[in-house]
Image 1 (tube, rainbow, N blue to C red):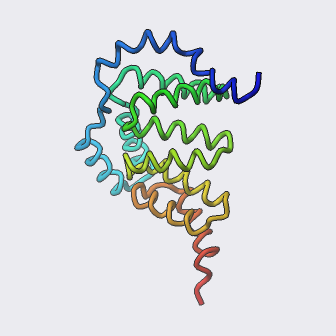
Image 2: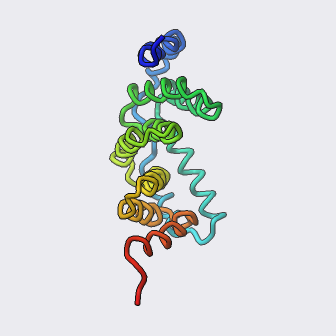
Image 3: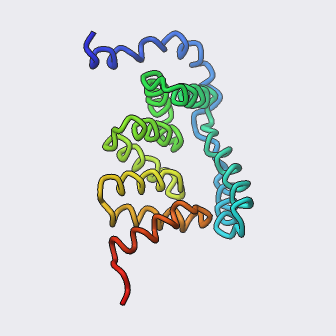
Length: 193
């Protein structure tokens, strides 16, 4: 079967499982990211004095980010993440795409799919999904880091430097970003006299 046909009909494999989960949508589709909780955590993250302290705060932010408000969407994202780890990219794509369709305002659905697109070297789709993440959660440092890496790979050094700087402004403990900023400042802005 042609690859495009396989991709077209691949989501149909999952319909029985999705049909069983649809009643769970009644639990609420608005993602349950406690805005005030996140705001406080981001304030703490910006002031973290060590990587260990930042890790604890990051983990709590991720815990909140992974709560869509829908048990169905949460399950799809979790199963999609398992499929991504197992390199079952077609299943991961189906699950992340369904999560995005069911909960388009849920940033992490977009972020997981962007990660998948990055892994399979579809930078155009990954960048498109990252833009959706950042519209919904502009403080998503991981999405900014992913964007920065892709911009760097695409030799768009100005854009990469900007994205790394934005990520560090949100999460100052990103050592990889600090190293990339130093390198890119020389490449983009040149050396001082």
